[in-house]
Image: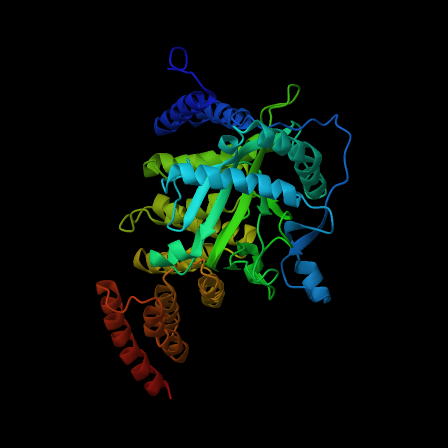
Amino acid sequence: AVKVCVNRIEDLAICVNSLAETRCNMGQFNEALDGIDQYAECGSLRSALAFEDTSDKLSKLPSYEWIQTQGNEDTDENKGKRRNVAARTVGDVRVFEPEDIALLRAAADKRFALAAGIQTSRYTMQYAGNSELHLDDLCADPILKVRMDQILQDKVYPLVRAVFCEEEDEPPLGSLCVYDSIFVRYNADEAKAAGRIGASQPLHQDGGIYSVNIALNAHKDDDENGFTGGGTFLEALTVGDGDHIQRPTAPGHAIIHKTTQRHAGAPTTSGVRDILVIFLTARRPETSETDENTWRIERAMRLNQIAKELPRDKLIPCLKLASNNDPTNNEVPYWLGVHTIQGDMNDPSDERWTEICQGVESLKLSALLNPADARAHFHLGMAISTRHKYAMRTKRAHLLPPPKEAADSLIQALEAAIRLERKCVEAGCANGINLAAAFLALGDFVARLKSFDKAIAYLNQVEDSIRRAGDIDENWAQSMLQEVSSMLDYCKKESAEKR
């Protein structure tokens, strides 16, 4: 197919991606890396927008400040825990000037009118109220293309270099370039007409290595005709007391973060919000090895996606290879832990016991890499509970951690999941975690440790969690409530006898 059918870079990308997927299905993971590297290189060549010219003389760049975890109070404890999450441009120099915004929005309006409501985005994650256009398509207008290229060279590329050079041991050696770029229009009225609370995007990671999110119109706080709601929900900020929804300081300003930073588009609840998101990667340097940091990040993300479609015997080694390539991305050990735990619970072998223990460790690593990931904490707590039940059933209780240590680990994990997920739900960016199941698991575990009053306190929150989620009439919810009722009767009886 590569030899006879390829007409465009998109065709080549499809071919090498399919080859990589086939290699992974065959268990030939090292051979698949060649195809994945070629797929990443296609991504760096696909856009017609200008790539970084490092010989250009730098113009005046926008100033920026870091958005950090743990709030803004300057206590010694907070200072030690702070982590840089994203950079936000500030000051008089903007990434896009008003005339740039007007030019881009006019081109988008024209393209939307021609599309007549038909979605033109090549992305599959589409939701009512959201409309998307690819910047490369808009740049069929040569005037817009020239201006976008100039902004990339004069502001975007050098700004991203300045932001992340202090953060990384291995900044990209090749020229930065556009992996893709989309104009996104969030229309609150259209979203609400479809039954949504607003126009939004769920929690996700991006493609490429850096994301640049540029505001193209004003919020109502700054303009009476502006939109309400909206902004970028940065998951990492949920561990602190600060605002986890962030917006650029004004139209033309930007928020910049690594693509592995999990984030969501918070619901725009009235009006229309326009943004331009530019996803950056890097060209393959002619004098560098292919496994420099850029390519390891790309490899891990692609292997993680491919793994989800593989049978279990191929999925786990595929995820392990992804983790070897990018040990900093918490998504990989998260999925590795989830799938490892989901094996045959009726298999009493030593191999299965080792798998369960490895699953717990993978989820611990995921929660360590991203302490704000409610999913990682939730599945870690569930995995600790699973390990305990399996050990008791297969006569391996002597291999478990001491009861207090195990109880503390499970309680900390599930309570963290509940606390973080409630913040996500409040922001309209839920992970979809079953909080009722978390309270049930907490109650069940501490009841097994004879802490009946604690168990009662947890179990009493199951019904409330189900009602808040609107699931009270679901069959699973009714079955869970029956189980909770029996457990409460037992715990109350045992608690009374202890007194």
